[in-house]
Image (tube, rainbow, N blue to C red; front, side, top):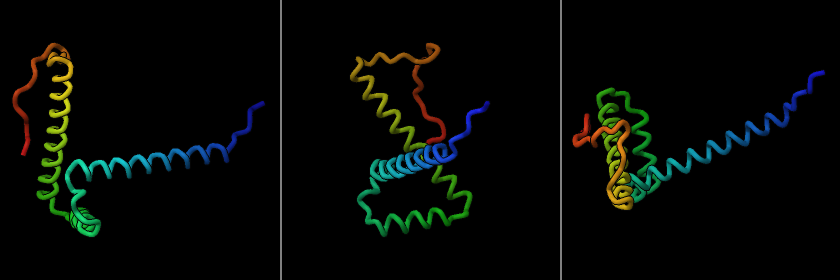
Length: 108
């Protein structure tokens, strides 16, 4: 005989997971605001800027913002890697034995 499903338990577990994901998303957005230096803006200024960004339909502007954002994250990754190299003596292994890259592609 099959065991009956506990729909209430499953629903509660899904709601808990959704709440956890939402909390993590809010935390990550806050960390992003701080990392970009936008925490010096007032809440009204930040909300207004985000509204303008969300309403913009011009593909060229959105693409430029995406490139700038990607460059921001790549720069953060490089800084974090260089900090790790300093703490480990500078000998960081590259996958496949490849030498570290010296240039960056597409950085605006």
